[in-house]
Length: 177
Image (cartoon, rainbow, N blue to C red; front, side, top):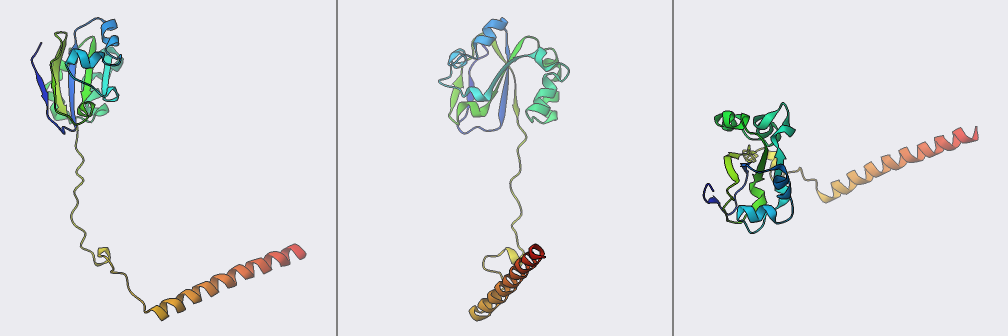
C-alpha cells in the first residue's frame, strides 16, 4: 500500500492514474458495483468517471497519447512521467475527480493498486473583459415616442398586408388563366 491519498472537497479537473498489479479477471471484477470503492477504501464512487482497461487496448497511441489527446491533460505534465507510462503493462485504473462527487475523500488503496501519477485536465478560461460598447448597456436602444412607434408599426403592417394580398391575387389570376 502506498499510503493514504487525500482528495479535497470540491476538487475538479484532476485525473489519477493507477497501475493494477492483478490478474485480468480481478481487474474486470473491479467494474462490479461497489467493488472498486471497497478496494480503494472509499465510501462511494461514480463509476461513470472511472475507467479500467488493459494498456494493450490503446495500441499505438499509448498511455501518454490517451492522457493528452483523450483526457485533455497538458503534454508538459505527461512528459515528466513518459518513461513510466510507456513501460506500463496489464490493466490501469483512471479516476477523474468527479467520481468523488465533490466530497472530501481519503483513499487507502489495496496493495495491488499503485498510484502512477496525478494529472490536471486543461482548464477553460471563462473570464472575458467587460463589455463596454454603448449598445451593450441596458436600455440603450434608440427610443421612439409612443405615437411614432405606433405609426411605424402601422406602416410596416400595411406594407406586409399589401404584399400578401398581391401574392394571393397573383395566385388566383394564375389559377384562373
